[in-house]
Each structure stands twice: as C-alpha cells, then as structure tokens.
Image 1 (cartoon, rainbow over the protein chains, first blue to last red):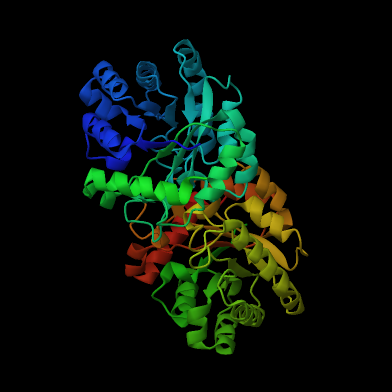
Image 2 (image 1 turned 30 degrees about the vertical axis):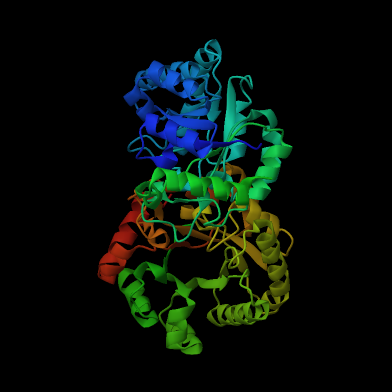
Length: 269
Length: 269
C-alpha cells in the first residue's frame, strides 16, 4: 500500500490539466478525479490527458445523493457517473449517499432509500465493469450529506451485492472515532474499494465541510489505520483528500510537496 | 416520561437563583444543575434554594474528563462532584469522559483510561448513593471532549458495574445518527440515568460546541427516540439542554416559554 494518490479536491483551485501536471512534477503516479473539473475538460479528453501522463485513476468522485427527491434524476445522474468511471478506468466510483431529504426527519426511511437506489444502480455498474464505493461519513454529516454513518452499516449494504460491483470507502476523517473500527476493517477485507486519508483537526473550523487537516496536523493515528487496512488485504492506492480553505489558498506545488512529505511521515508503513 | 427538566445550560447567562426562579415562573418542576453556578451560589445554600422552590434535580453536570494527564487531580475533582450530587439529591452525575490527552493520538489508550478511572470512582459513588451517568458523545467531539462515541460503547463500560452506580445518558444530539440506536436503547433499559434533548441543526454553527438547536429547529425525530426510551422503561425527567449562542442572548423567560412549547409539540408522547 505504498502508492500515494492525489485526490483533486486537495488542490481545489486547479483545473484537471493543472492537477495532472502538478502530480507529474511531484512524482505522484495516481489521481482521484472529481466530476466537475472532468466535465470542464471533457470526459474523453480528460481520460486521454490522464492516460498520456501515465497516471492511474484511483477513484472518480462522486456519485450518490440517493436521497434527493427526484429519483429518476438521481438514477440518470448516477448512471452518467458510472459511464464516466468506466471511461477513466478508475478503480471505483465514490458514493456520497446523501442526507435527509428536505423537510424530512425520517432517518430510517432515508437509509432504506439508499439501499433501494443502490440496488437499482448495481446492474448498470456491473455492465460497465465499474465498482461502486459506499462512503460511510462522519456523523457530523448525517443530516446533510451522508446517512451512512459507520463502516458496519456500509458493509451491511455492500454485502447484498457482488464485491466486484459494490465496495466501501475507508476515509480516516469519517471513521477514525469508531469503537468498532478494528473489527469492521477486518470484516471489510476485499470490499475496501478506496482508502482515503486526511486528519481531524481541532478546534473544528467554522465551515464543517472544510474541516479537514493535512496528516500530522490533527488527532488521527494514521499508522494504526493504515496497518488495519493493509492487514485486511488492501493493496491499492492511498488517496489524500483534504477539504481545507487555508490549503486551497496555497500554491498547488507547495501543497503537494507537503502532502508527499506528510504521507511518508504519518501514513506510509 | 412527562416531566420536562430545564438543564441550566439552556439559559447559560442566568445564575442558579435566577434559573430556579425562571423554572418556577414557567411551571417547570425539575432542573439539571451545572457545577460552576452551583459553586457560585454555594453547594449547601444551592441545594436548599432548589429544595425550597420544590424543584427536583434531574442531574448534576458534570464530572468526567478522565483522560486529563493528572490522574490524582481527576479523582479528587470527581469525588467532589459525587459529594455535590449527593448534596443535591440529584438523579445522577453526568460524566463527559474527556477527549484525547494533549499530544496523544492513541484513542484505544484513552478509552482504556476512561474504564480505569471509572472503576476507581464507583466505590465512592456507591458510598454516596450517587449514580454516575456515562455520556456517549457525538463523534464530532471525540478528539476534544468525549472518547465514548456510541451508546453501545458506554453500555459495555457501564455493564461492568452495578446499575445503581453506573448508568448512561441518552442525549439526542449525540446519538440520533446511530444506526444501532433502536437496539442499544432497548439494551440500555434500566441503565438509562438521564434523557437529554436538543436538536441537530444545519448548517452546523461556526462554534461546534454551541451547535445545538431548540427541538423542532433541526433534523431529529424526537418522538421516535422518546418512544424508544419510554419502551426501554425510562420514566424519569426529560432534560432540555441547549448550547446555543443565539439562545443565550435571549431573555430567559422567553427561552423557557419556547422550550415548554416545543417540548409539548416535538418530544412529549
């Protein structure tokens, strides 16, 4: 599990072309792509750009938002995301499943909806040879971004389907606090479709969405979690995905130099 | 489970005497007391003040912070809190167990420390006829306030001890997202020492500590959780505890009128 992959979000101000160039300059050989900058570049052209640069695509971010009121629109949009994942040859399509629908307080219903929409999308993913990756999110985001709150819950859902079609994301920011983490990462085994890292920093920044820190700036024991993930059999890339307003104001090459150094110090086993 | 109790924190700017008077004016018959305003008034005088007003004390908030580096100081302070709980005749002493020690990323060690300090305090609690109430906290606070993150984890700890000496707090803000909530509240049964309510609001306010809302302003289904707690056999008071900077700027009588109304609308079964 030695390969660092740069999730584009870490240098959010950069275009896809700029992010690809920055990776090449930094010696980073894998990238996690976001759909918006991919669309800005064009999907086929973007796939060619990345391939020509010799980069591996560890994930496409993101599909999901299954709990949105217009189910047909959700299915259309996610099928498009599946096609894009196939076009990039990405390891998986990361799914942020969505929070409570507007005006609803019915959490069990929202969770049932996620299971239901997932089942509808699996055949499309299988047809395209794409792996869907359910991302359990820190309960901090339960209301507005992701009603899947634990790895256990994500695995319960994933295990209804072929492991080639549905896996899970282990993101340190989302799961580090889980008292059941050791057991659930071992259980996840070949369901681990993506391993993402960033730190939990305190005090939590004012915008909860941008509350993530560079590895080493916060409270997470990355070696411990990386070791659990490695023992579970995961050998894929480790994506560094950091939503942080301060970081986004810095020069991308400087950010990548920091990321490479901190990855070696805090994550690499 | 019909009794509303006002946790003092909901009108944080008020002294103990002011809070007691406000409860009496609002027809609220139970109060959750905080140690700092109690100390300001004097413990014995405060106990007499509350008793003379005919108020029941549903909890003393708070003991805990077991993970602080100076273990002796932790034990001294918590024993004092136990004595104060006995002096008030409060239903329980709420324990916020503490986050990671300064500079530490060893979450399993911090959790082991909590179990260990708890075991040291139980005889003192039993001697005083005081019930300790372990509060699992939203993972939002795992790093800096409470390494107990789920009801299941709190119950694992509590069940090492006599139910009369160690129970748990069910606080909607902390547990509402838990996929295992139904099972764990049923399991808690007579371990439920305190039931606290406030809402989860979005976007999360800038100060995560003050991120709580009045019932009805956010995403929590209080009837569902109150029903689970009632079915588990809990018949005690329901404490309204709201940390919210906007609320703290309002007139306390206005706040209590709102709290009483929202409690009837959103919580009462």
